[in-house]
Amino acid sequence: MKPTARAGIRLRRRALFLELQFEDSVTQTRMLRAAPDLLWVGYTRSMLATLWLQPRPLSIGIIGLGGGAQLKFCHRHLPQARIEAVDNAAGVLALREAFRVPPDDARLRIVHGDGAQWLQGQRGRLDLLLVDAYDSDGIPSSLSTQAFYDACRSALSGDGVLASNLYATDTARHQARLRRAFAGRCLLLPEPGMTNQVAIAWNGQPEPAALGQALRALPWAARWQLRAGFKRLAQAWHVRQG
Image 1 (cartoon, rainbow, N blue to C red):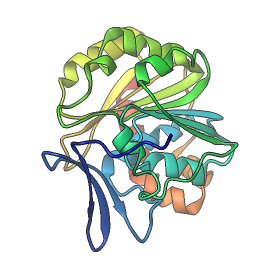
Image 2: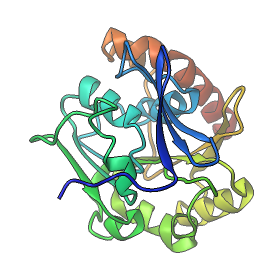
Image 3: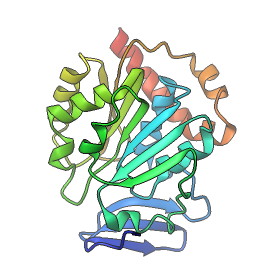
Image 4: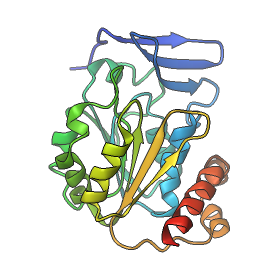
């Protein structure tokens, strides 16, 4: 059965943009109508800067679909990857076609469900996990616990990487739980001009390529979108490495 719209979620059409908003007018997603695959909102580019640490993910998991910006980017620019996304809001899934999210195919599957429960079936499978799930009250409690972050670590492959959008939440609490889950292997990227911070954590010992080499490995249309995020992540990485 196709999901139907839910109270508290609305679609707002502007001349240039399509927006997904909560009932209190908080904008969850903004899509440039002329370029639906573009990562328009800054923190989404920062989250996908994790491709510097994991440049060729074969399996990508996404918790929180929204308007599908990161999913569309990955589906277009990472043809080697299989993508599975989960969202617990039927009203969000009902807007999938409006936001030009591609239909399920051999590489893509979108499911309606609870992200924390979905993780339980992903042990060791994911090379890249993107967590971008929140509502008008912030990040749901089920996606904020120590058990959740432990499950994120377990769902990742041996060299898997996590990126999580921390919005309207106690960032220090999330960071502490990530540090426990990943044995200290995490860092925070504050998003310029926004209240979001992107938490990045990883398994193993990534050996990222030089920035120029890493960017050249991407299609041009992806390269220019991620260049600034790669640079900011590289700076934070080198500071952490000392």
